Amino acid sequence: MAATPTNAPEGFVSLRDVFGDAIMALGARDPRILMLDADLASSTRTMKFKKTYPDRHYNFGIAEQNMVGAAAGFAISGYIPFVNTFASFLSRRACDQIAVSVAYPKLNVKFFGFHGGINLGEDGATQQAVEDLAIMQGIPGIRCYAPIDGNDLARVMNEVAEVEGPTYVRLSRFPSPLVTPPVASETERAAAFRVLTEGKDLLVFTTSTLAAKVIEAANALKTEGIGIRVLGITRLKPLGNEIAAEVKAFAGKSIAVVEEHSIHGGLADGLSALLDGAGIAHRIERIGVPDRFGESGHPDALLEAFGLAGAPLRARLKATAKR
Amino acid sequence: MTDQKDIEKLEASARRIRAHILTQINAAGSGHPGGSMSCVEILAALFSHRAAAGANWFGRNARDHVILSKGHAAPALYATFAEVGMIPEAELLTLRQLGSRLQGHPDRTRLPEVEMSTGSLGQGLSVSLGIALALKLRNEPFYSYAILGDGEINSGQIWEAIAYAGTHKVNRLVAILDANGIQNDGRIEEVLELRPYAPKLEAFGWAVREFDGQNMAEVVDAVDWASSDAPGDKPRFLIAHTTKGAGVSFMSDRADWHSHTISDEQLKAGLKEVMG
Image: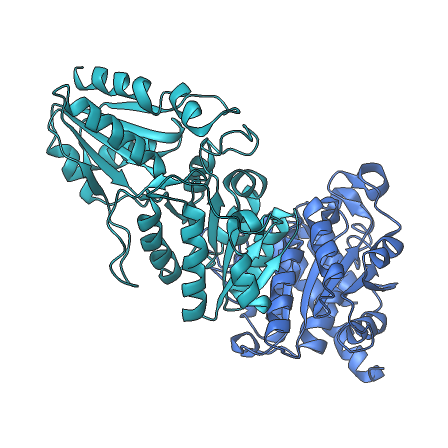
């Protein structure tokens, strides 16, 4: 399947299409950048890069462990390899290689996990990833990102291409609306947090393209008189210290984290650790994937079934606000 | 063919490397003597002969690259570094101590002379593959060597790398198998039998050579062949038939010496054997 146009509603953007454009720009800017694929180049949108720079694209076949090891060799040789495959296969199959061959020796390898979360939908649990961020955040020294829309991904691409050391970027499959401003320049980086909606009753942290669903819920609850301040978090590790002040300002009120990830090892855990370290008492309502795998279904139906969108999410946020 | 005098020099070098291995593991109180002793001739041929490494060798950008994928043979690597002047000999005694650059398994962030951090077996060949691809991309006349253990090649990742290198004719890649016939829990045939190696590797598109891995002249000859245009566009695989614990009779060909302490008495006896 060649780079088919994404069947997205008006105003919706697919992160992988943004990725495909970004690597063309970055590749032109920096000849050290290479693309590594594992027989999913049509899914990861690297075909155009391959066509333009045939010598700088490598397809390792369905052999993720070897791909990650070879990336380490490229990095040792002064190149900047972008390693692309599904978040599930990357984080689960090649976990030890990422840890031992890349993170431990602190090599400059850029990982891109496609189809993170459950919004891949119909393909089901094996291709979805509800634990990728837990795995990648648990490995010492890897900076982790989950961009909240296409514009945000453009900023993340600038950042990861520039920072030295291993990085992980989780991309979502399902196209999502743009909720952040367009990237301002080639040097603009991801913000520590971004205010997505204003409100005084409840503070909600969210990440990845699920942010759009949280904004939707917050807007709906506003009409019921519940004001929610939604903060979008793009960089999960390290979390910006500025975030602690945001929580402090909400002292005595409820906090929730909404994430398309296991409630173990994701944003909620990272936020909790940050607040513990800053000595800020807190109770976080964890709205995420409970201790279970995903399943097949239309992305929107799945997100609702998991309580991460629509009426179930609104009900959960309402209850938390009134806690 | 390498001059007999040069071979004798390398043999003397190998004896000193063996002595360093014994001394290090005795001082550390733990380590992997068996697999360290079996790959000594390979390391001597690579660092002293092929790369002609010296104190400043590693700082050069344009050079060969050597990864000890069987990272548990770290004492042999450190001993070789000391032998060619890349690290001070006295540092060898810090092996495995808190704060030492000489970690139990090689760590490139602490000791930059280590090409790659290894220890989780099966990973080094892929890294050497990446380096070999980079050498080809830059059209550099050097080679990327990976030293593998025969237990290590149980790992599926090794065969992923073998398939890739064969498919894409990565002829800057040289894998050297330290085939000592014994892995952690016992003999290869009792754990996971992958022999015969040569026909499998040839079927994957590699040029293969087998030889006595404890015979310095044969090792040097094989390394020279692998580092030449002779094998054409194929990646190169050297099967070095070795003996675990080679050089010390009471360690020789014994699985229990895979991971073992070396007592002061054993050190004395071992040094006597290796130095003659």
